[in-house]
Image (cartoon, rainbow, N blue to C red):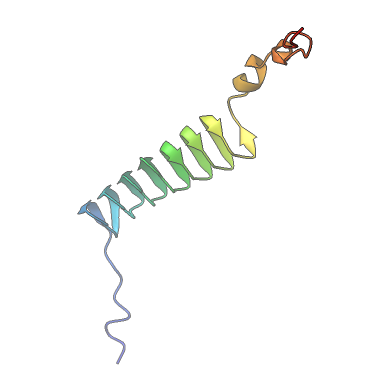
Length: 109
């Protein structure tokens, strides 16, 4: 009847491959483990080129809590932030109000 549906999947410790699943640690191109390391990881904690986990660390991070060069999370720390709460407000402080162009400086006489 339903003997195959009632079996629970066992969580492996480590899974390595192109798209590894069902492991605590997954390493691969597109891993889906709890802790994922790879090019496009989708784990709870994701580390890689384009991570998409709850906690994401990588080049283009897309998690709730993101760190990287380009971040798109709820709370993020990165060089280019596209998030609601930015953890590095130094970019705002570095902008100087005197950098606007004066129209009298560039007029031809």
